[in-house]
Image 1 (cartoon, rainbow, N blue to C red):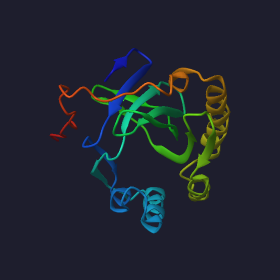
Image 2 (cartoon, rainbow, N blue to C red; image 1 turned 45 degrees about the horizontal axis):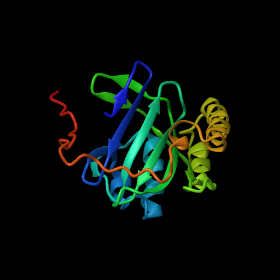
Image 3 (tube, one colour; image 1 turned 30 degrees about the vertical axis):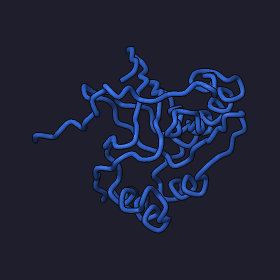
Length: 185
């Protein structure tokens, strides 16, 4: 955790950090096997899915999570610490608890280049989630408003999206590697 208050957190990940993700997503090789990724969504819609440990690769990430917001904003950094791009991940608002927060990815994303150019990603998966009922009509309305909010942040260069693209970020080598809490029950 880099910073936190009662309604937001800024956290970091870097290659080698272990998180949890849907097992089929893990099996899909970070989403490259589209049929397994689609199967993961089908599992989720059917209520029959498992979580598995997943090791983060490729980029250093500084992520801002805000209560009641339907997306997170992340700065994705290359191995040398330079900004590769910003990533806006649309997801259910965080549910905070003692060891962190829970959320659910809603498939659609916004990718913002260092020069400010942006494009949508995975809109086909978002529509599949809508067809499966994973994203309800009420959630779709919230995501539509959140899309507008995110684009406004991009255009205003606000929050993490306003950080200088020339600023480099690398994790402090002295930081201990975060670990997942173990469920003892």
